[in-house]
Length: 550
Image 1 (cartoon, rainbow, N blue to C red):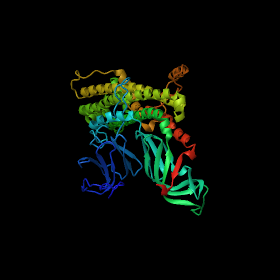
Image 2 (cartoon, rainbow, N blue to C red):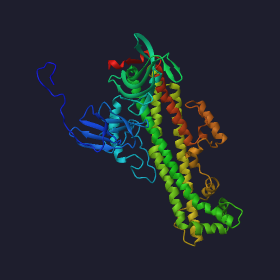
Image 3 (cartoon, rainbow, N blue to C red):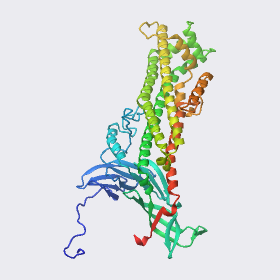
Image 4 (cartoon, rainbow, N blue to C red):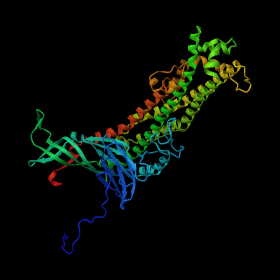
């Protein structure tokens, strides 16, 4: 083929490689910064190759892949899945794990806590690879230094926008937008019907979004009769230009809010998982305890005694003669080995819960409170942040809820410590009783406190204050608080700083639910108000390009 000047002959294309693959490639995308090619095969696998055809890794999301693109810096490949989710993958991580952003406020706090592992699972079974998690930190921190927005569209005509690919900032339904266009030499307003987004591309200056879609473009005043449109309409592919200059105008504000919100969401996941892990560990230990000690109630009934296990234990503690039911239970049913096993399980679970609180739950709640405080400071800069919807009242409420959650965590630590101590004291006394009934020496055993044994039998033997604070099914149940304590709390409210005088009546699980809801409300309000503001000028929102102009 000759050039325009006709001075020399050149080949339009030159074949570099011709390599077969195990499955047909349905889409591919070059990395904008490196010699990397990402390909999606028909069996929904993502294959990453270098230009010399060296394969770096292959991942399988387990779902049908509908779209593929690169982040502008070339470090992250983004997959759109058939269920509407978006998956981000680090090209430098061979495990194919999705990105997880982590906040590090090293100036005031130690590194952010990780998500605790579920008991009984080895690393990797939860979907979180402990070895690979550190590799995300540097990439995550560097990616947040550069403001980036992920745009996606679906078959229902909905465009979604998210900062860093993880923090959603709003969506637009192209069916609801007025599109100025020209039909039959006259200007008119049209709308799309049954539109499906095929491709989107955001300009580098964030001011315009190109949307390629298919559907029917009709005038806004077209009537519908019997399911058929009457009037002029255009079927086929359409190209729209979305005015997204609000992203550029509010770039710094959106960047700061998104950083805070993404970090808070990560920490909320740590709190949520911590509560789940603690609930499972404590529930398993209590099941073992009741599985053993419920046998005593059956033995009491079998011997025809009109008493309860607590009363039998109190009689034994007071020096009364051991009843046949208690003797059979301690010597035959439970025994020294069974007693030590139950003690190890319950006390071990208590120590594990304390570690989860100290290493995961409490640090996460403290940093959440700190981050909420930063958002409150931003919300008071009304001239900059009120325009993007950062509502000061909602954020103030979220800050108070975060403080209340921290108070609940402190109370849980005290309750857990007290319960574990009383269980250990009860087991020490019971082990000594077993030794004495079996006529074995008990001088080397740990000492016990008789008063604590009485308290345990009256308040903890058939009650579980730890599970009451953790169980979501008990979240709506109120905790009984004495009138004197409630009066002191009301007096503290008068000094200011918080206005909730009933927080002590709520469980830890309920407090977390309220804090999570208030935090999401305060931040997500920013998203909704942002696009309500943008959508208030529909005439300037979309520009339409006719098919024959493309």
